[in-house]
Length: 119
Image (cartoon, rainbow, N blue to C red; front, side):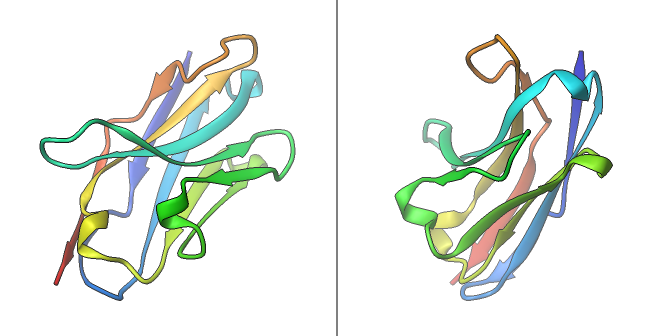
């Protein structure tokens, strides 16, 4: 089992920045990759960014490229999402997720943290 806990959400004005954290615990040695997702009111959950746990390969959805940066510290079992130049359309509940080796997809999820960007 892997447990994930997000933190760092809040209210920020458009153009501002926030840094989300995701602390992993449990069988973290089995993690293959981790990612961030978000879900806005009335919308489907959407992928934001992904990072490979064993190296530094990253991938972003087009709408956040150049504004968001995903990073990690394996020794601390922590992943971050630095969000700059925030826009009102970034408002959502942000979730971190982990995929174990062999799972093929994300099989562990955090509880989510609210990010609200005011115009």
